[in-house]
Amino acid sequence: MFSEISEQAGEELLWALEREIVQRTLGRVRSLQVERKDNRIIIRGFTSSYFIKQMTIQAALDVLGDAIGRKLELDVQLVVLGSATTVRPGADLSAPVA
Image (cartoon, rainbow, N blue to C red; front, side, top):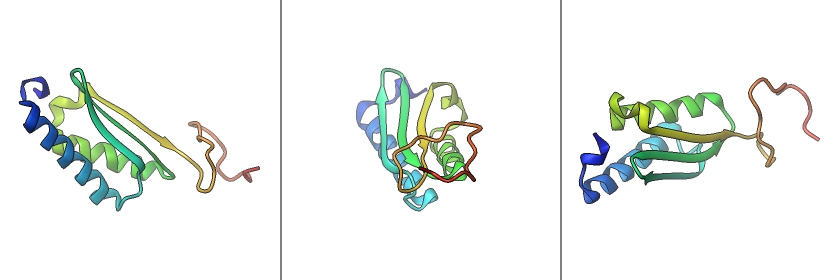
């Protein structure tokens, strides 16, 4: 699907996706990057909430359509505010950060 879209239309689609993510998450994905590489869409950034990460996924599916799901790469990392530490799944978020 996406590989058949012209380069100009592809750039407009990426811009629309980035705008939709910013709008839905109220700008809470920091260092947001949306790019096309080969036949994939790559979304990168940082957030402090699993909910915001889910909103990013939903925005991508709504803008790109369900068919793109297999070609979507999401690299939105969850971070503790005020820290550069990446929170791994299953981490105890109630523990104080050193």
